[in-house]
Image (cartoon, rainbow, N blue to C red; front, side, top):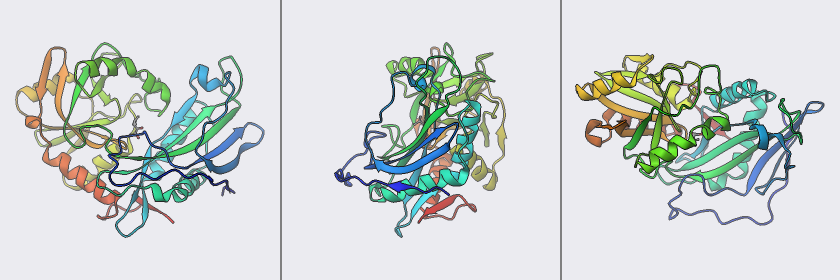
Length: 356
Ligand code: COI
């Protein structure tokens, strides 16, 4: 159990009202959670302090070798006033898997959850309530040793910041256009692909710029070895409905194990769909699009929730999916997942955790 000390701001900012369109990740609340680590003390001095710049040496290892991890989850305000988190245990489990992969010390799950609840409770008034909005929670850890040389740091800082957000894509729930990337790769098996580390996202930038310039929202990554099999999209996992079956690339070490991905699989199975987690090639996908058996494509992610895909392009070929509109199953998944997150619908046991 953490003994959190509080230093509240004396200069609170105005909280955005319902008229604010809330683009993603641009506004931050009044406070942040901070906790330090050193090899001799372990995790120490958990505190909630005003949201402000942090001070690090220019030699801090995070700047040079990228030893950094992050997570993303959301808090929601239910109609009855409760503040709810969606499956935070899964984010915490993944955070510690990422930590293990990049040599950052573990944070006990109960302390992690306590820290999330404490910061959300502190800035609870910032949770927006308009449909499609939520309070995005961004926990991250950085290596802080002032040292030039490649080894794990001996000191770290764990920080949680909060941001009231709307839809991740400007398209909202309208289908996005996706570019299948066959020049650059995001990750390879044995690399960092399944870890939520900043390094994976910097690896994606070049292709993302290329896709944006061509008028596409996101990049769909192929496997790093054969450049044949579909892995994931820039900020989401990917699902296909082909001939009535739900198909998603199996977790193979280079794909992020998404919490929304897992929730989608569990819901689809409960609704009686056959769900296949397996290798699926871009060729199989395009063939399905051409012969009419590709019924729906959607991405899943905490930020993106469910994001229907209306177009896929590889090389010179662009295919339209489901007439460029939202598929029935994508819509049902969106309605159900957001319904559970907002406490309007009953979800499976343990999916929703109240912040009291
Ligand atoms: C999320 O969905 O929470 C993410 O971290 C994706 C993106 C914002 C990088």
